[in-house]
Length: 119
Image (cartoon, rainbow, N blue to C red; front, top):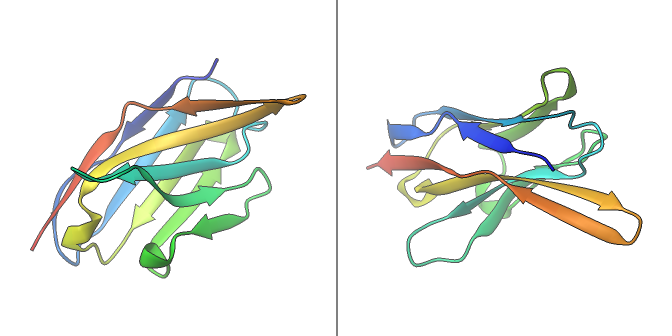
């Protein structure tokens, strides 16, 4: 089992920045990938960015060039740096981690952190 705790959300004006953190309860070395999802009211949860255990990032088109995902295995933490925020980025952001064990894949979620971008 892995517990994930997000932090860093809040209210920011359009054009501003926030950095989200996702702290894991144990080593993240074997968690692959780790990612950030978001869910706006009335919408489905969507992948925003993910990063492999080797450090390769992936971004949804709408955040490319504005968001940066990173992981610090020594601190068991994944970050999402969000710049040039837009009102449409408003959502609850969730941290996710996946682990393969043989033919099984486990998926772990944090409780979410609210990001609100005002226009």
